[in-house]
Image 1 (cartoon, rainbow, N blue to C red):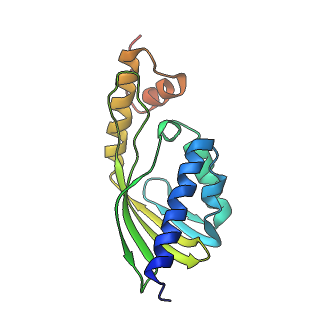
Image 2: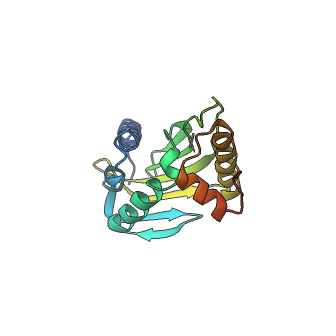
Length: 167
């Protein structure tokens, strides 16, 4: 179904505002509520999720654990709209909080959203190179470690990922 550019623009702006609010609150339920009950979410590193509640379970777990819990925003670096398909295709940045030394650490992904109407999405697909995210998170850990701010959850994650924090 073709959608107007104005409706897609507003729906994507609503999506972005909701994500920002989720980050602010540390509560990702609002993100899951952006999707239809039967939505499909394809996340290339974490898998395929069918339905809003499966999306909710995944996103609340993932974003409450390191490294997701240290990501401070998810701005769109750029986006394009396909009114005929009802798609928004964008690059989302994933910056992490300052590890204590002022350095910046981030990785980006391509997101494809399928609009369903009424500010709801029927599908999201995130595509990226997981090694870029792994490298960014490891560098963040090393910077936090050097600054004396490495939290326990990040230290445990780093150890699981094959990195050895300093003693």
